[in-house]
Length: 392
Image (cartoon, rainbow, N blue to C red; front, side, top):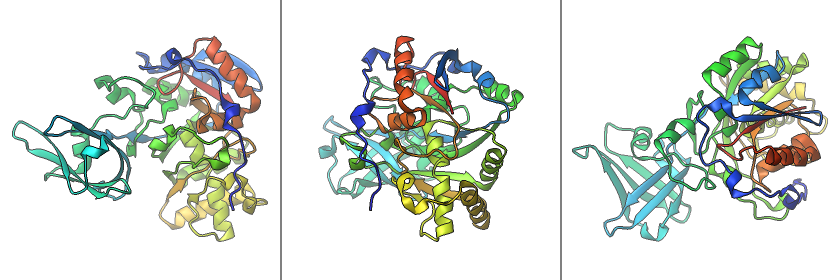
């Protein structure tokens, strides 16, 4: 049985003119505007002010995933081109991938695509269909190169579909966070693009504790909502990793009444999934780290206290070696109870999107006031746009 509410996406619509969508990043990462919201009040700042706005003693958690060059372009002998967008690795060595294929009819079953680099053609990447119907391909590269090395040579950073331009050399650096470390995402955790090394030091000086988890952002984050109601939308599933040291820090912060602040909706999705993972352990439910879209509305978890679920989760992660790997498809919609996060750093999202639903759930009907203010005050929108700090 599914418990996702029949929530209308139409209620999350607003008018976003094309010219308000940022096509390029600002010259300085932390010079972006920052909208600060708390208890119904809005203030305008710059992102470099954030160390003065986050309360000392808070725990700021960011996503250290690294965007891979997931776009591959192959030229055919007859002059046509085939583009592959790598969506998700299906093998540990990255040889098998789920893909989206452009000009698919030119890449037939039993055919091979290849691309070569080097003065003597010493590195060649080839692609074959493993299962064309399921959009699964197999990659091979000439030795001694690995697939990740080949992607760095041949691949392009996959900019979001609403950025209507080709990738530039600048995007290789700017569409990554300064703390990007674990390769695997096909989209950036964009709220964290505003941080600089200097700003991270300012946060340390201000007494803000910082830590990282990993969620590999998938292309599903850009999946357009075509359903009228949330209950009809297929929520995307993303892989995450979090260690026991961070779980202990989260529990300690919440116990002393300090804020846990998510940098980005990706971090928030992981953090708000933790209660359900621990609750499944307490209840003896199979696959504790597989979080369903309707977990936040499933009465199965009623009555289990957050601290009990975190304790069970910490014990479990310690037993399995200190690192939790899971998948979350959690759907955060009005009616969802936030148990972990007391603050959210996020950019401004597309009208009627699942990310818009998350923000509207966190701030309630004030989302209209926040987005109206941002439009009136000339904020820049979407991935390369400006940011907000939303506090409970």
